Amino acid sequence: MLNMIKNLILLCFPLFPITLYSQELKVKSFEETPNDLTARTQEKLDVNGNACAVVKVAIPLEDVFFKGWVIETISTPGEYIVYMPAGASKITIQHKSIVPFLYNFDVPIESKHTYKLVLEIKKEDNNKREYKIINVPEEIKQLYLKGESLQESGKDTEAYSLFVRAAEAGYAPAQNKMGNSFLDTDPSKSIVWYNRAAEQGYPNSIYNLGIRYWFGDGVEKNEERAVQYFQEASELNFPDALLLLGNSYSTGKGIAQDKGKAAWCYRKAAEQGLDAAQYNLGYCYLKGEGVERDISQVVYWYEKSAEQGYAPAQEGLGNRYFEGDGIQRDYKKAAYWYRKAAEQGDVYAQNGLGNCYNDGKGVEKDYSKAVYWYRKAAEQGDVIAQFNLGNRYKLGQGVALDYSKAKYWYEKAAQKGDADSQLQLALLYYDGKGGAKDIKKAKYWCEKAADQGNTEARLLLSLW
Image (cartoon, rainbow, N blue to C red; front, top):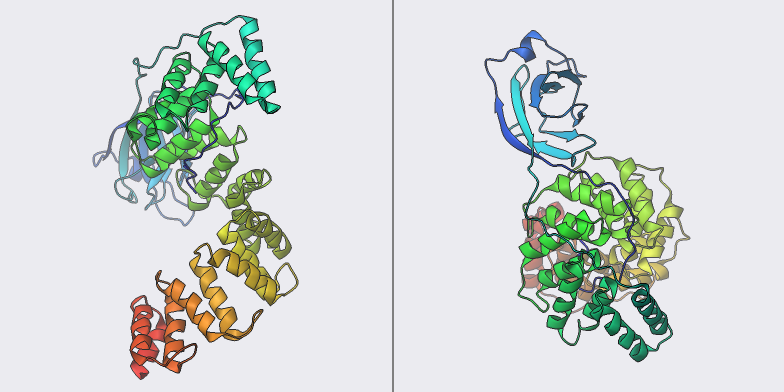
């Protein structure tokens, strides 16, 4: 789901104006206040009729909105009284001027207890890079555009000479293009050109510098510095930078982990139409990471991404239709989206489409087609597909019955820890199918499956 691949596209993307929140919150303190009896004297009940806890939120803003397990909010001068059910573990604070802020309580709050959460606005960083945009003559811009036209026509040599002239004249897009041109031959020169454009505030180049530092291409690898570049480019609304900044917040690589900020970054990139960000935002809603779990939002963002051809989203949307999770179950649509992703090589979709053919769900039942798609995924190393393909050979469905090939695929998956494959492999060794009978190996694989809690394996061990 993180999409932080090395061959990220480094071309010049158009910018789309969006409104970024101007401020961020930070926690000054959170504590229980035993002498404050608000939760007892001004008691309110949750939906189950139990007394709520009270969280008093001190925040220097008006018209703040709270999400999460919130029963009622009362605004008072200087703070908000938020009633929440006992056991609540987090609260989300939203305001038009701040980054949505998710706070996880140290411990679940208790009924009839009052707590105090004090928040403050982070001070702005006065050490941010100052950009000096160079205004080049119109003829320099036209040189660059002519170079692009020549490049599209396959006249790379002529195009390159125009890019050099425009770059040396200070035109940032041309400088970025020069940086791209040296990626394979001299990465250090790429850094020089990216820096020249970045100093002018050109977001593509700032982002590209982040990529170089992330992977250590042309510079010493430095994830923290890479994230700083992603942050700078994100402030200029560059969607790809927002995506990778979201990934960094999600994983905690290069910056402190913050799922709420990750989801926020994904949203800002998703709203600009970036397919990977749309998928990642949908995944956040699926797992409830940084946002409240909301399957309708999962489907919404997966559809946005899937319609652009993004395979993970197509596979994910296929799952939603197959399972009827947040959407009316529709096997035909599930098979449709699985096929879209499977044809792009997505192993999970290939296995899913194989299941559709195997079970006759959304498509006409066809074991040979099931085997075709299982094999596609199995050859890419997918454990479940390897198990499924082993089953087809064991049962002779869609292929000629062949215990030796069944054993081959079971063993592939068994070696990766798949308990069901370990059990099936044990049975083949015990029965001497697909090779010589081998009780020692049968018990070995049966024990492996039993150790993972496979009840059938445990039963067989007691009998063998």
